[in-house]
Length: 63
Image (tube, rainbow, N blue to C red):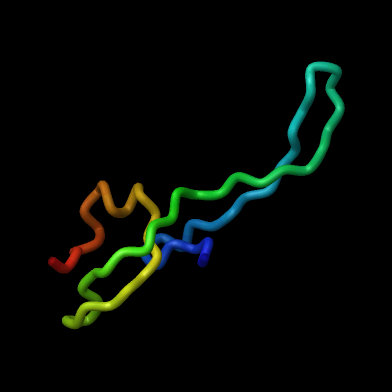
């Protein structure tokens, strides 16, 4: 599954998980990306969009 939003280009971020004893280990944060049928350039197309863009109305879904 694609991990990049078609609208805002949001993708995975990397960082560190920090334990109570302050030990660091690598981890990732993934955005909530959904596969959606939307109108792109006047025609319906299947794209991957984050839920923030869906909720804010930046994507026009097809019926």
